[in-house]
Amino acid sequence: MEQLIIFLILLAIGYGAGTMAEKKHYRSIEEREKMFLKLPAVTGKNMILEGVEIYNAEIVQGSAVISVDYFKRLLAGLRNIFGGQVKAYETLIDRARREAMLRMKQQAPAADIILNMRIETSTIGRNANTRRSIGSIEALAYGTAVTYRK
Amino acid sequence: MKYSPKQLETNVNVSRTSPLKDFCVLAGGLFAFIVGLYIFLGLCVDLIAPHLPSKIEAALGSPFEAIYAEAVDNEEARNLSRILKHLTEGGAEGLGTFRVVLVENEAVNAMALPGGVIVVFTGLLEEIDSEEEIAFVLAHELGHFAHRDHLKGMGRGLLLYALLMLFTGQDSSLTSFVGNSLVGVQMNFSRNQEAMADNYALDMMNRQFGRVNGGLEFMGKIAAKEKKGRLAYYFATHPHPQSRIENLKNMAREKNYALH
Image (cartoon, rainbow over all chains, first blue to last red; front, side, top):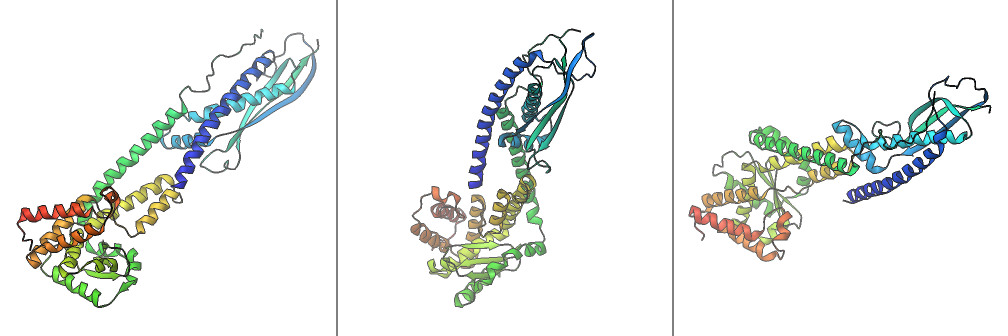
């Protein structure tokens, strides 16, 4: 009986705190994305404007580790029985990738363009190696920040 | 090539369904499925149990050996065996071989266990004065055997255990809780099964003694002792004594059994 109560409490904490943290994070992400609108990050390697001289090129990287809360983990577990889209984890991955990209841009705010951007996602944390659940995911975004000579 | 920065309004990577709704739908679906499975398999158990060969039934009794070990062997125990023999030698069809075991325990209860063993607790004997009352109790337990109630109860318990193990894992708290209560001693029969066993006992008493007041006397004593209301009896192993007395009286009247 106590196990059930503890389970429900964890579920409530997971849902409540998780939803609050997610909303707050999304607000912060959207704000910063507005800031960095002028700095494009592209996956192409050779997208330099004609006749422009490159003054500086350096590697920039940003990583973010986001953890899943108890409620989402349970929801994904249920999904694993029936199959279909695991919508619970969608926000998790979305936030991690956007956060990683923003941090990457933050490393070179004065650059003109970030070339050859790649994003890599991996699972880390205590439960990363077990079949049952994901602990937290890490997204790494890296690219070459290029500054033109003006 | 022109680059015009644009803030995206909508996010295509995130679905708009609420996670709570998702959770309710999934959990509800899973729960309904498990309940449906349990009911279906319970019906199967009901169908199979009457046809179970007696060898397997005897084998099912082995987990309960621990209880027999505490058996008391004295004048009272031998008396019980004698009464049981008297009851069953009247040609009770469909029953195997039986024995009665007296266990030192203050519980006012008797149980029918798989393997043909009737366990009577000393607490029960202290409440009883006459042989007819003992005979009624034994006949009631024999009724459970005749209707294979213990097998059905055990089958359902095993089923629940297997289902829980399948869905929550062997080491989950829910599974071990049900596992422990399976080996636990209380076998709950449904209200209907209890009433049927009472009726069987009534028939047997009539056959052996020509009258059925043993059961009524016994029930009357228990009813007088029990101060609990009907509600408290809802989850007990036997129905409320008053209900059983009414049922017995009705049955006796229907079948024209002598009450004295």
